[in-house]
Amino acid sequence: MQQTSEQFDRVIARCKDIFLKKNNDYGTSWRILRSSSITDQIYIKATRIRGIETSGNHKVDEGIEPEFIGIVNYSILGLIQLKLTDNDPIELEAERTEKLYDSTVAEVKDLMMMKNHDYGEAWRNMRVSSFTDMVLMRLMRIRQIEDNQGQTLVSEGIDANYMDMMNYSVFALIKLTEEN
Image (cartoon, rainbow, N blue to C red):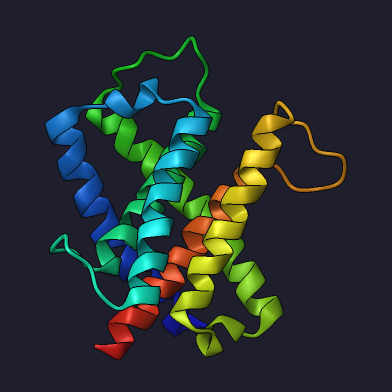
């Protein structure tokens, strides 16, 4: 499991580098997004991944790795948005944004390590296409929860689904790195 922890950290370092560069370019303009818009952005990325996996080709000169990185970062944005309130400013200081990113990643990594222990690293035997499908399924769950105004009877909420999508995407990125 130490290997998984280190691989997780390397993937997140790649994702964070892109996140911080975009934060420098755009600021926290993402703060204007509602949960449903973040869900739709992730949906666009996951649907593109599935299309590439199914057809084997793409016209835009980016493969599936940047899309999984985008899912990781949008999942983190979604989790941060759920923590912040309307009283928080749209434009956050870069230092605060990075701290929110890091604390969110730490929370999700802790969950991943606990689940990974219980499931015996079963993800290592999964196909990348299965991670794509799991992300799409979580998106459908989130859409249903959003349609129910955030209410669930016995199921986990939006935050748990964002966490799962992030972890599935990290696993996919680890597997893709191992295949290259």
